[in-house]
Length: 139
Image (tube, rainbow, N blue to C red; front, side, top):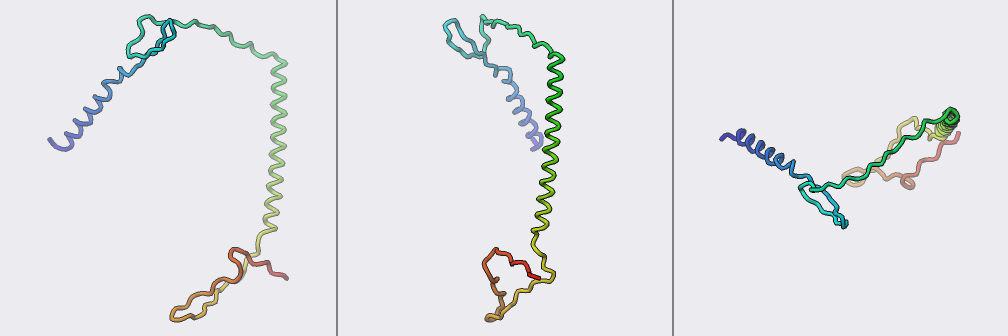
């Protein structure tokens, strides 16, 4: 048998085997009069019915409740609008402060001096503590 035909036969066989037992996977739980719980693959002989409780829906809200809810929604929207305005002003102030505090940009390139040390020249290590920016120039 060619490889492809064998693969098709094996795949179809695997599908049939896995789907054949799908109906037998049901498990039934039952409780007898003494309170013992049993599990089985067959439904109980005498199924016990649970009492049905009828629930009536809540009555619709009156016009006063509707007006109160609308007023509360309006107050909430106004408050959220006020908070949004305050947030935008804080963001604008923060952006202005960051623009003011921005470090100065060096206009000319910085060259690291190279000192010949032996047959190969290496650049000198940076001066000052690592990670500390240079102070701004004074006019």
